[in-house]
Length: 77
Image (cartoon, rainbow, N blue to C red):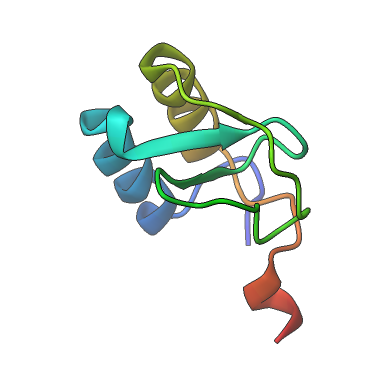
């Protein structure tokens, strides 16, 4: 897989998130985007989040434009 080109599913997910930023928040521990009702990050177990819509949109665009670099709980299952 070419690591300079993001997958279509990541780009699509980023577009959905950017269109509804108030439904999401950014983990301040690992910069993951999580659902707005998440209490503890499933990736790093942090409990501190940035809820600003501008930050969510910016992070969604950043993550949607590149391949996944982090290990998620799903990857470990």
